[in-house]
Structure formats: C-alpha cells, structure tokens
Length: 328
Image 1 (cartoon, one colour):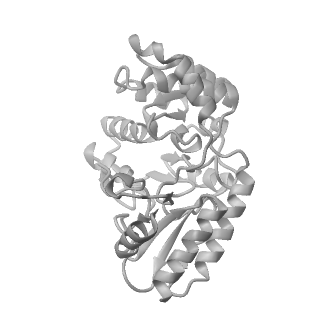
Image 2 (image 1 turned 30 degrees about the horizontal axis):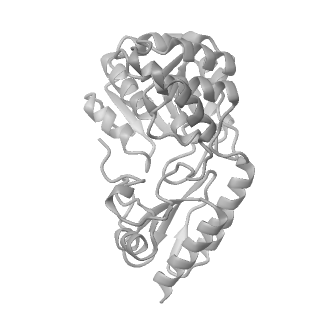
Image 3 (image 1 turned 135 degrees about the horizontal axis):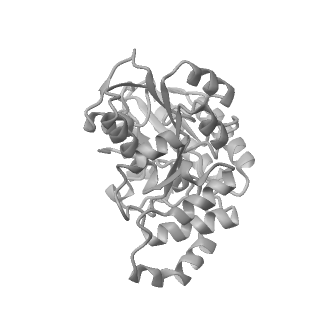
C-alpha cells in the first residue's frame, strides 16, 4: 500500500506550487466539471456493474475489440487486479524493472508472488516513474519477444516524446498487458479512472476476478466525456515537454545536485549533500513549494527527489529557491 507519495499537500499549510505530483496542476477542468454537474443526478442509481459502455467506446477509439478493454478504478486498481489474476493462474515468480512505482511490488507480494530477476514475467513502467526514462515501441516489441508475459504501465505515455506501444500492438502481440491512466492524462486523480488493454485470452482471465461496481457512475460519465471530446490536461504537449527540458537544464546547472535525463513531464534529481527530506521541508515551509521525496523508491537513496514541470513562472521560482538553499 502506498506510503509516502506525491501530492501530500495535506501535510503542509500554505503550499502555493505543487511539483510533487506527476499530474499537471493547471489543467482547465471547467468543461468536464460542467458536464459532471449536469449528470450528478446519476448518483441516485447504481452504475454499470462493469462499465461496458465505456469499454466499447475506448475500444472503438483504439481500434481493438471491446472484449480487449477493461476499465478500472484508476491504474492502481488495474495493477492489483493483474497481480491477483496472474497469481491465481500460477505465475508465482515475476520480476520488476526498478527503480519504479512501488505498487507493482506491493501488489505482487500481496498476491503471494515472489520476485526474481530470472523470471519470465516482467513488469515495466514506460515512461518510468520516477526516472522519466522511456523505451520506444520497437524496443518494447523486442523485449516482449523474449518474455512469456510483459505487463507495461503506460500511464505517462500520453506525455512523452517517444512512440508508445499501441493498443493494437498489445493485442496483436498476445503476451502484453497494458495499463493506462486517465487520472494522469486528464488531471483527475480524485475520480480514479484507468483501463487495461490486452489480448482476449488475458482479459477473459482478468474479468474472473473483477469486483462489481468498482468504477463509480461519475467516473464513467467523465470517461465518456473525455473520449467524446478528446479531453486532455495539457493542450500543447509538445510545448509542455519543451518547458520540462528547460526546467531540467536549469536545475542541472545548480551546484550541489544533478538531474537525470527525462522523456516525460517529470524528472529525478539527486542531491550531492544533505537529504531530499530536508530540502522538501524547507521548500514547503519557507517557499510554499512541494516536491516529491523519492527516497522510498526501492533502489534510490535519501538524496533523491522528483519534480514535475508546471508553469514557466513556477518552474523558475523553484530553480531560484533550490539554488538559494543549496548554495547559500
């Protein structure tokens, strides 16, 4: 279970700039909110036990059969469903490409799965959280050819300069289970909305362990609106990625820290001295800025932290604050 995560804004008072979450903080949600207000009366009735209407719509958009799509209560719900299903099918030995999102390991361990680097079932986040690294679709296809099964979390695929593995590719390969997140792409973490894409042989097994009514009626309505209107948190992804790279260059120029290359909207940073927890506390209490202490990612150190790009003005303010804290 997640402990110590981004967007822990409830722990502090006076946060004005939030770099800790990989969700873009300045999305214009008003059109979506207006739509949901007009449909709020739906909460008086049960939602679909399984959101088949949204699954059909997503499948049509991606060019795959509806039976190859499973809508979930966020990407994390998908992760736990996949782990439980694989365990029940006898896939008791798996591996995870690290450092990465801790929920893969937690879900596997909860399902009784053992982790081993020699296993032929692999979990990979692409682009990867928290490093920002990413593999091209051609490389993922080559990897899949050598694996019995590959689970690929593409929650950040919408915001990257690499070509992501398509839903058609995942279904066609037959041994790939994809995870997607509308939470990230549409900046709606409170609604919880994600989906799985895989060949029918896998979705049939996954559906055996679905709980009814896991996706609430407003989340389903939001999903329909998002697909129908092409809604996305960032209107110009290319410009946003350019700003992300500018922020990375500026942070990398600060004496006393280094920043890894990134192919998405967030980046992994490392202090040469001190700890990320100390820097996080100072930025939060003195500047009203929140960053993600990344020391609890398996394989990282107390010096690691993660930031996600926001507006140009906020990014510049973050650079100034960190520069002052590290060089004064």
